[in-house]
Image 1 (cartoon, rainbow, N blue to C red):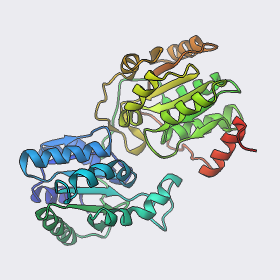
Image 2 (cartoon, rainbow, N blue to C red):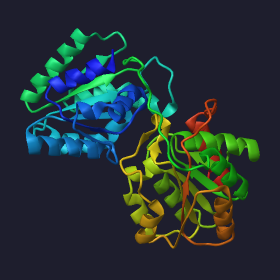
Image 3 (cartoon, one colour):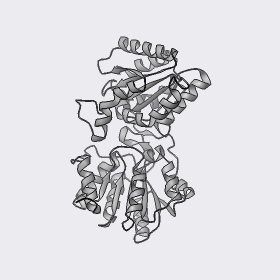
Image 4 (cartoon, helix red, strand yellow):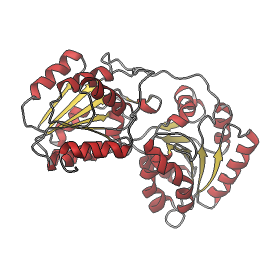
Length: 378
């Protein structure tokens, strides 16, 4: 289906506000919204997480009486469940809205391990929340979409939500949007430098997406294994809390968390908790490229936010930033041998290798290897 046809039909449904978190399955739609969607939809916001997008949709309805469209990857339903069930549901406030849900981990289709279980339960989860849905595929016609949106309109009249569960390749490829930022240091180069700097006893926790994929390759290349690395391949935004507790319980080791700006923005309250309960063996590193690069590159909702400034206010004992190889090497050298809760923001480009690999081992293998390295599992 042409994305322009889809957008026009959404507009005919009375939708003026579009909000959500980018998803690779919905990349054609996300690119369209950045490229020309504002000509049809006057309000487009990329918030911090999917639950916040539901909040925006609630605000839209209360202010205008119009339903909004909320887009997300199906993993994002986890963030959206609370506001959908405790606010928007018809047994509470009854707020109509349209959900566009990219279906990762669809049964029978090869996908990443973090998507498998959510992919299996996505239809059941929507049903459990009382949200009727239709499935869109690459064969969905405009007439079928009209029927789907007609059902959505009927749901809206009953103060209910309606979902479009969208499979890969549903939308025809259109003019891609290539995002850029002013930074010259590549993220993989930064990870290469960090991996060289690691000590044998260090533990590393990395966030989901290309950061973990690049760290996996660099660790295997330079160290010969990734046994000291926990790859947080799902649960976007929670890597820093995992690292925080590991640091608290493994106080004799240095723990490094490699975070992304999109992930960090998603649950920024974690930084406040770390600042209020600092672990002097924790080094929290944010690789900031101002975008959700792992799922298509759309800018985050706050691309100009300086996380190191927030970290200072939150209470981290040491904060710094770097935007070049030399500056990064100097900052890493300055914390070697010191025990101080540190936040380091590294400004990196949006470039990444087209041939970047993926972990060959299962998530279970990674967990066991990491715990054996710590010594809590034989």
